[in-house]
Image (cartoon, rainbow, N blue to C red):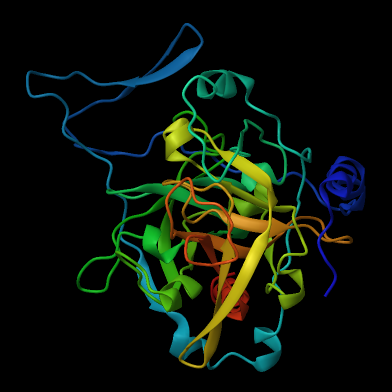
Length: 364
């Protein structure tokens, strides 16, 4: 199968080709942005105050403070296996396409020099030199990356449909009864907020509910699709999907991985690495489906789980995701030695693209 564009080609692709290929009929679709979403008792009378260029929502608070609750509704969970079996084979074979609606496009992302000045003084070495670049960029495709939050964790994800987000199954706050607790996504999140607000998941599509330490089989299926309460993808765009090809193992060295690293930015600012090479691929079966463990020696730490690894192909308007950041096998200082014993791992394979397609079709 054709390989994705290299970094030099990508700069031209997103600098000139992609904006030119947008349909003339494509127009900007504004979305109402929720800047604050909390539960507040009827005894309080909130007021909106503008002061020194800032906007504040204020209420009167007594000695016991304000009784606030940030909890969002619980999403419905769909274990997609049985339902997906009913989908037409032609639909299953479809590769979900990316979408670039409006606004600017760029590659690579604009480097966050302030962050790197701070990081330089305390950064540790992982897999040799750390190749991650902290960025602040709201152009396409970077704005489609966002922060995942639950009551117990912070991780990464990306827009994969009009109201669909791709992240790792182990990033979901699964309950013991099989349900899932609230989970939110903030596209373009940077330093405490995202330019388009925060959205909560109303439904989760998954093959497996992964918690704790993962087996190789669980890693191969370690991804879910969240369905958001609003169609923010119509405004900012989204990625497509593609099944990782055996011919790309050790031959393509410019896959892009993006996420919110805990060690560099305490998950408050995103970082990308555009020199990723997939060094191994192992397939696993689950209920007749094939998922893949994609081994690599790129730089990942806590917080980057759920982030996509993607490429862009000639003729496409945006990236296609081939894997989701899942696990780290070895210590941070591990180096490639011809073995998969200490590599990092993405989850991918045919089951990934099938799950994306299924979720898009079920909840368009």
